[in-house]
Amino acid sequence: MSLSKPKRKVDEDHRQFQERWTLQYFFVEFNGNATCMICKEKVAVLKEYNLKRHYSTKHGEQYDKYQEDERKRRATLLQRELTSQQNIFHKAKKDADAAVVASYVVSELIAKAGKPFTEGQFIKDCMQKVADILCPEKKNLFNNLSLSANTVAERISELSSDIYDQLRSKSKDFTAYSVALDESTDITDSAQLAIFIRGINDQFEVTEELLSLCPMHGRTTAKDIFQQLCDAIERAGLLWNRLVGITTDGAPSMTGKKNGLVALVQRKLEEENADAAVVLHCIIHQQALCSKCLKYEHVMSVVLKCINYIRSRSLQHRQLRAFLEEIESTYGDVLYFTEVRWLSRGNVLKRFFELRSEVKRFMEDGRMDVPEFDDPKWVMDLAFSVDITQELNILNLKLQGPGQLITAAYDSVKAFSTKLRLWKTQLSAKNLSHFPTCRSLAEEGTAFSGDEYASAIENLLQEFDQRFADFKAHCVSFQLFADPFSADVESVPNLLQMELIDLQCNSELKTKFREAQGQADKTGQFLRELPPCFPELSKVFSRVMCLFGSTYLCEKLFSTMNFNKCKYRSRLSDAHLEAVLRVSTVTSIRANVAQLCEQKRCQVFGKK
Image (cartoon, rainbow, N blue to C red; front, side):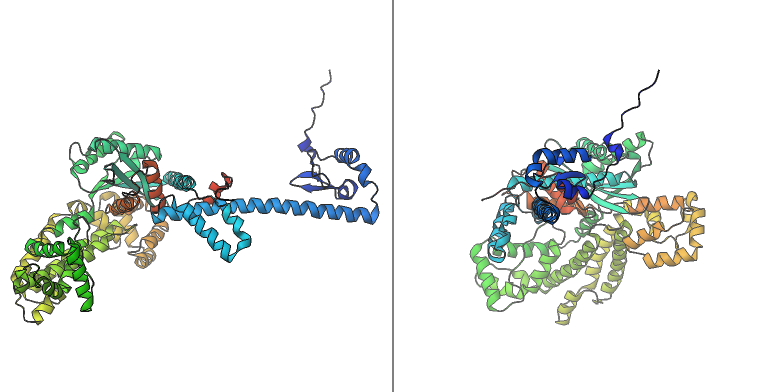
């Protein structure tokens, strides 16, 4: 019994288009198919018989009369006409794709600027007016741009989803990560839990992004916050055994020893047979709490009484500004004080001190009696408050910023404590080298009580020494990361001692480290070049490098949230709010607009 030979597929023939068919049958090859230049029909199977039959049955009678040069001329003309039509379609497709890309770019800018979605149509109208003047021939390109409110909202949501997908993809390579959490309320009194993640891969590349913004419409107990954290970690596909740190604002619901969020997280890690996470109270919050030990309420109360008297009355406020303008003052107004703003106290005191003579003259004009202006002791207290709050503001600014290494932040705090010890000694000796405001008054003849102000510095120093216990508990690891070549071998765990000795004796690595010291990007480059013979040290470096020192990113996010979801946009949904905030706060990830455009077709909106 003979077996029949299986039929061969057309694709297996590897047929090729023959150039002679262009002149014989008026066909050209386009996108792998034979296309008739006369009727624009395509022949799927590339066989000469098929082309010949098509030509004979449909065009033979009309085109057989063309021979030799005339036939060549006719073929060239048809081919040019077909190419021209194809170019028109290609240009239309290119313009449509460009319009989609432009809509994504503009939508991203709208999100980053905190503008309403309806601004898209306004921007389009502006571009159309500009096009009418500058390039009327290209006006149709702007007409095809889709920037309606719904489209802008959709584009921002898609950008946010793409950024989140990239974050999830990156998180698969994290060898360690930490989270920073904080909770605040928006304009509608809905609680919003911000969760940021800082992860590091085996190449010591750090990714620091918003993991999730979780709306909490009910209670905000530690159990509720923990559940939101669990959901965010599971959605991102993160592993619990790689969580090495958690940084909070120090609220009771976060730090409770038995039922707080930290306790629940540690219990979860224990269930997962993972090491306990490093728990830190935001270093900026602790610094702000330390500054409250300065007992100068008698200064602040008078300053606020004067400022509130002026700013709360429209007439008084206008008159003060007119008065300052009339005398050509350096500043045109006094500043309002806001308790929750870290730098507000220092800025308000400095402005008030520099305008104290002007404010005094203004108040003496039958408005309000402020006898403290004539008290040299009170004025000197004000000057001291100005100097010390300015120093605290400088420290606060050093602790702010994204991507900051925890060791650098803690070094700034230790440096400030050292400065306090120096200032205490100098003030006792009435040395005002580092207190310019007090020095200027003393040079004018105002009495200065050095011991009293040295005592205030002593109280501030004690507060700094008592706080930051969580950072001090890990100072060995921090010191090892900050400068492994100067670390005491006997002070580190036994597991690290042999590797540390080998590292400290490697002069080549020591030279490279000195060049990279203190710079996060160069530190990562140095760690990437570490030989594989330091596995335990690399693990410690990874854990320290991915720790959050503060909840600065959460605070910054809440400021952006309040700007976006304000009284004019109070109906902004939770999903849109998270999308806007993710797009506006992203730092290390770029949305893949080209990939998003492939999934879209240009839609034409607007007036015709």
